[in-house]
Amino acid sequence: MSEGAEATPSETSSWEQADLLSLVAANPSRRDTPVAPVDPPLPAPETVLSEAVSLEAASAGSVTTLLIIDTETTGLQPGRDQCIEVGAVLFSVPDRSVLSQVSFLMPAEQNPAQGVNGIAPALTQRPQPWKSALACFEAMVEAADLLVAHNAAFDRQWFGQGPLPALTKPWLCSMEDVRWPADRHLRANPSVRDLALAYEVPVWAAHRALTDCIYLAQVFERCEQLEALLSEGLEPRRLYRARLSYEERHKAREAGFRWNEPVSGAWSRRLSEREVNRLDFPVVPVEESLERRIA
Image (cartoon, rainbow, N blue to C red):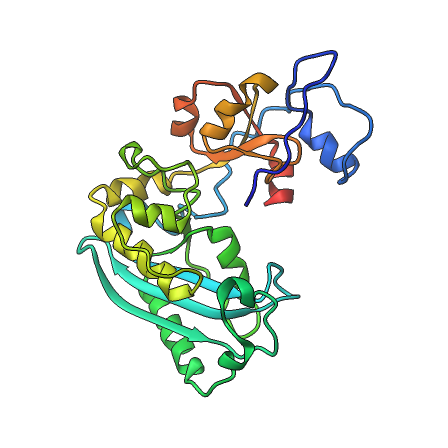
C-alpha cells in the first residue's frame, strides 16, 4: 500500500491534521472548503482492540502454535473477485519448527491478476484434491492458537467467502503488529521479501501463497526474540493520528504512519499504549466511531 499523495502546506498557516470526523461524516469525498484544525474529543475509557487480534481469545503466554496464512486472489475486492490459492504453515513457537503445511488452488474461470501471481485460470481447473486440502487446512486452523499473515487485513477478508470457511481464531499481522528489532534495519512496515532478507532467508520466488508462508516460517525459526515480539504484537491497539507540522511530516513516515490511509487527510497508525509513550512527537486518538467506520 502506498501512502498516497501528500498535502501541501497552507499559505496562511502551518500544516496540521484536520477534524477527521467532520471530513468523513459530512462528505466522504474531498472537500473544497478548508477546515480549521480541531482536536477530536477524547476516546471513551474502554480500549479499542486492534482488528488484527482479540486479546480475549489469545494471550502471549498461551500462544504456542501459529498458523501462518497467505492467499492469492483474482483482485482486491471480496464479493467481486475470488481467492484462488491458499497456503498455510503450522508452526511451533517453542520448538521454532514447522509442524505441517498445505497449499491448494481453487477453480477459477478467469484471473485478472495473473500478471502478478502467475496463476493461469487453466491451471486452477486441473484435477487436484483441493477439497481434501481445504479440510486439512481447517484442521490446521483448529490446532492453532493464533493466525498470522503478512498484511492480515487483506488475507482475512477472503475467509467466509465462497468455499473458504469463516475463521474465528484471533489474527496477528506480521507487517503491522510486530515491531521487528532495530538491528535488522527494516522499515516500519516491511515487505515479506525485505523481512526474509533481513533474517538471511534466501528469496527464490514471489507471489505464490505457500512460498510467502515458508519465508515467514523461516524468519520465525531464526528469531530469538519471537516470544517477546508476539507478546508486544498482541497488546491492545487503537488508531492514532500524528500532530505534526508539514515540515515535520518525515517523523510520522519514519515511525510507520501512513498518509491518507486508513484515515483520509492524516498520518495515522494503530499503536499500543507502550508505543505511544515511545514516540517523540504528539499523537491524538481517532474517535472510536470513525475508527469503526474505516476499520
